[in-house]
Amino acid sequence: QALNSYLVWVYKTLSLDSPSDLNADPCPSLLNGLVTQRAGRLKKIVPFHKKFGIKGASISAGAIYTGLCRYLGIEHVKGHEDDDPGKEIRIRAGQAQGLLGTHDFIHVHSKAPDEAGHAKDPVLKKQAIEQLDKGLAQSVPELLKGKDIILGITADHSTPCSGVMVHSGEPVPLCILGPGVRKDHVKKFDEVSAGAGGLGFVHGPEFMYMVLNYLDKGKLVGLMDSPEDQPYWPGRSKPLRIDPSP
Image (spheres, rainbow, N blue to C red):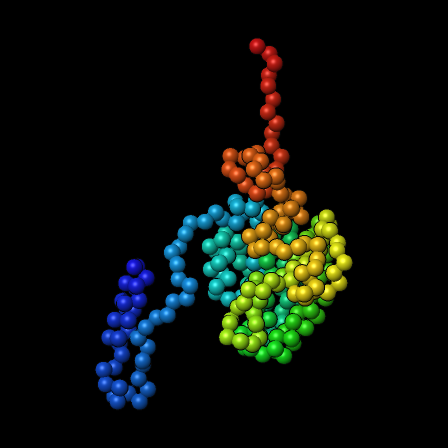
């Protein structure tokens, strides 16, 4: 109801600014409405560091990521932008390295494959992925030199290069490297090959639980060692000691 009232107000306000006689101006303004996308009511959420017990950051570009990070309680670092996706991801990986001493979870984002998919151009998407491969080949070995680094590479959704759908529901590949991560026999990073890997089929909400597990911060489900039921180990606490004296 509040959204409808706002859209009506926008329409009336813009209509007042529109010329009544379209012949009076060779280039009249016909803007008289506002389109909302995925509108919803703002909800109060548990900040990222309280929900998972780790400090997070996102290296990305675009106003939507700035807003999401502010909403989730994650620090936003403006990512380097470049026409070459490979160079862009390599520099952003370098930005991530600079945050390793102050953050536990760092999200490094690339929009290139998604934009190529939206263009419905398979060749363009192939080129974007190949460029990302080159950039990752230059940056991943350096990242893994760090102590106790867990590296995950995946996508948030499938973006088909044909058909009418913008995003589709096919599973995306997921690769996790680092100490304590089981090694399987998969040698290629693609949708079909990754599906046969040791991680199995991972649903989105399960990803952060995997991260906590590989960071040695996970705990048994239902173990109440803190006032609130949290998915992470709260850390060492002062032991309870009973004075035997009367």
